[in-house]
Length: 449
Ligand SMILES: Nc1ncnc2c1ncn2[C@@H]1O[C@H](COP(=O)(O)OP(=O)(O)OP(=O)(O)O)[C@@H](O)[C@H]1O
Ligand SMILES: [Mg+2]
Image 1 (tube, rainbow, N blue to C red):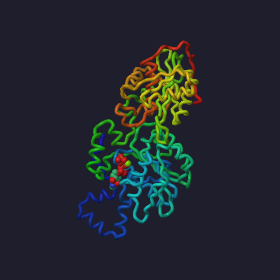
Image 2: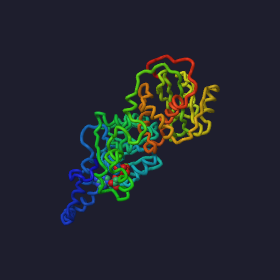
Image 3: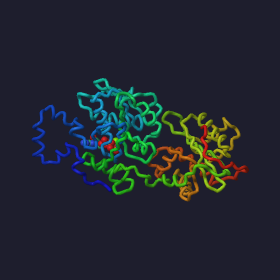
Image 4: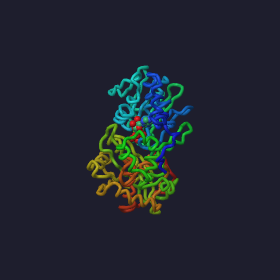
């Protein structure tokens, strides 16, 4: 599994040269002109890059680098941007996981753009404008993958996106990014990331216009410090998650996650039977800023067969009046029996907020007395027993579910999955009285919300 030794063919010309005895490489370096000696460390394509790190030729839209920690992803992204600017590109877009990641890693980091730029072609960095300006007039604009709306309306020729598998809103950010990537005759995007099995990355990897490069952390072992290796790579050696974190494989499932994609797919349904009870569960965002979380809103029903049916994911990023109105809208559309909300997350915020809109809405408080994963575990068990069905597909919800591990390692805020857990909990684990009137069987319906 692990490539603990690296093939000669994988090395960069510099690495190959330095593997030879000093008595051979030293005279070679000395034989070069002073100018060439100074250029060498900046000769990415001809000297420094390993073959897989060189910008591939041909007609691609996306170069997707899925590789392990420390492989040299950020360095390759930064060098690709430099290569493009040197080849005449004028509008570059840089997107990282957050505003501070773009700045600290992609621009100012040890393998970021400033670090790889030669003195003669050093861009000016204007952090206040989040802009890089190269001596030839090329402009690099920085964006955060957590604020995909900012990407709307931009136009660019080339883009570098770092760690997109770990962005909060990859699907929306990709949509806006690729829509705006339309200047020049050869728009292109390099995407550098350790993978996660989420839909936007899986789809990007499959696209006809994408070239995928996979790589193991061990390919860059010689350039990693002992400290980096010990902290970031050694703990994963020989583990299943190491296939993702070291080898850069898109695993079908995240090790330790409470749900697998196969499990959700196996029990997916196109329609639902009669329902005896319907709930709408809300996991609220407590603050409302560009950076704040989504408010998870999930509608689910209990079938006459005793199974749970997930009906709708109406999660949104709105202010309290906005998500309140949306939740009430879903409640009406689904003819739900009650709304479920958590109390210790912002006090009675959910109830108060809903009552402003609909004073008598049936509301059930649930209190998060146990940790997130303890609460989710019994719900995951219901899936394992084949008792829960998704009526249709809910890509973003399902991505959160397959990344949901007890340690919570891969996603910071699984709002959709949390709301789902509350909905199924209220229907199947702590149910209240069943409703009087059955909701008749119907096929999958598209909700206006
Ligand atoms: N071909 C190369 N030759 C020499 N050094 C390299 C090469 N590729 C990468 N490096 C160096 O290896 C180190 C790790 O690279 P980088 O930060 O780009 O890795 P990464 O894959 O982005 O890591 P992380 O997973 O931590 O984000 C950096 O110091 C970088 O300059
Ligand atoms: Mg990196």
